[in-house]
Length: 186
Ligand SMILES: [Zn+2]
Image (cartoon, rainbow, N blue to C red; front, top):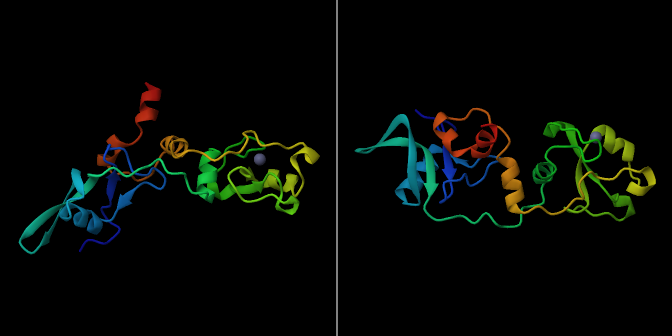
């Protein structure tokens, strides 16, 4: 009996780049088999595990590539995670890097002063900086974001996400990740 969360398949776009880096685009083995049957994907690599269905035996795919390209060039969603990603998990006031759970959001123009929740008014901030700034305007306390907040392109986020290491990767996935970092090191 193979459980649903076991043996996920890494899903690549038609250009053999992961569809998404964070969270990494993976699908369950059941969806992987379905996609193969529906001829939507090419099997790139397989696990050493077979399942049997009727008379057919299937090796579970570990890496799949979509046959049709999924467009990545859409405007990224304004979400908590994407703001952190845009700001490289760095407090935009003290410039230090933090894990997600230690980061908060700061409204550059506080809501109290009419500031809205948008790409151009929300930045990642650590708790101490966020507290210090409170609901004051940047000019009143002399705290300005290191980078002027802007809406990122999908490519901005994607290239940043590529540089973040993942845990528990199947070895067959590694060839499709980390081009940049490995090339940077050599
Ligand atoms: Zn800070």
